Image (cartoon, rainbow, N blue to C red; front, side, top):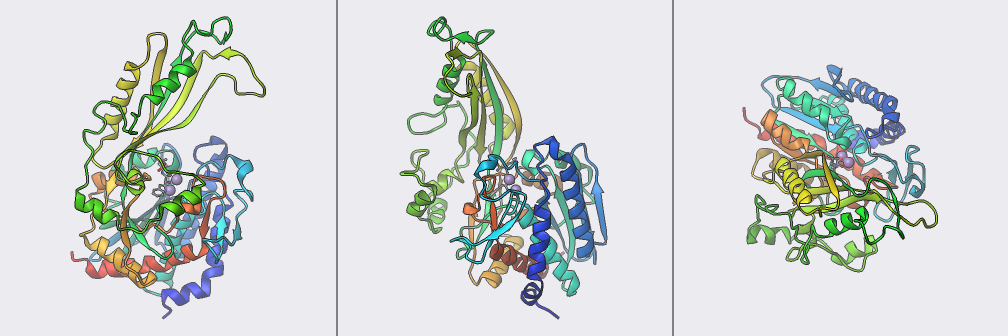
Length: 463
Ligand code: BES
Ligand code: MN
Ligand code: MN
């Protein structure tokens, strides 16, 4: 019988080639122009699960993009692992900043990835990480090494808020019943310092519109005498943080769980170099809420950020004009226990209240979701920890992430199971940015670690 290590050695070229094929399909969920490619990708995932050894695979229709479901049930007395991932990707723009086309994957060596990294949109988020699970499963089937039941649920709308999955999960509770949910859609500290993601932030995403006069005006004839929506919008946005970078929306922090001194102390032991952090981003200094470290600011603290702002004349040259409208997209990252609906409401009320009479304000709520924390005193965390020990030779560090996978909190609510986040990406892999990539080493390490998790989890599990 082959071990996972020798299986990878024998098949790694094919594993990489298959992922490259998957990455060639531009499954951009945000853009309806790519609907056909989204469906092609769903088919690709379905076929790959079938080939890897699922007994039953299904393309589940939803109001939006299909969900691919597959399962291998070997014994009802054994535990069941539910694997979740997403086959959709972020848009590739700004396209001119890519060194190679986003949907023509190539392998390049980098400083962080001396053994090569695959450059393509979705390489790390999440096609590469999702596909590790398909290949790990292929191994367990091929080498008769599957210790438990497996269910796969791979969706195509994660990057746009998982609307169809929120519709699907409550309608398929029995089908999705499981003992643990396993997801690789996050990162780790570095290839030398493995970590397990133990927290995700929640999210509230809104779009604001500030409306002034009924038409664009000459900025000489009217400037200074009527409210300029862009001036007003920027002033309003600036007022959302105080001089200590604390968010000023009343009651915003009411439900924030403060960490104890001990917990913060524990967190601060995770290896982190502020100098390297600044160098990697080419910034002179960091910035953020007073009284918290960089790692705290980007994980255990809520934030408010403008993601886009526009209005007025943006073409070439100068045009003297006061625009009639100004817009911004604003995201708030939330911490566990903050309810995203409540925060959205607080934002709307506050933003309407601080608007001067001279403008009208419309706030539209986009998607959102709750945060999540994985407890570390469970058999699934222990199993994951042992799996990393076996593949990396080091005990992984539990670390809360700043990113969001809103569906994880819904899984817990609807399916009553905990999620283990075994992410193998690095922050420097540029997810959502130009030149996204995923280390070949990371890809193969993920494939190696996953079967160990299945093994330890099944061993520790008692009915
Ligand atoms: N995989 C990411 C989330 C992530 C990345 C979490 C790295 C932790 C570490 C996911 O695909 C994503 O991009 N989520 C969005 C939210 C979603 C509702 C669009 C995010 O975090 O912005
Ligand atoms: Mn993702
Ligand atoms: Mn993403």
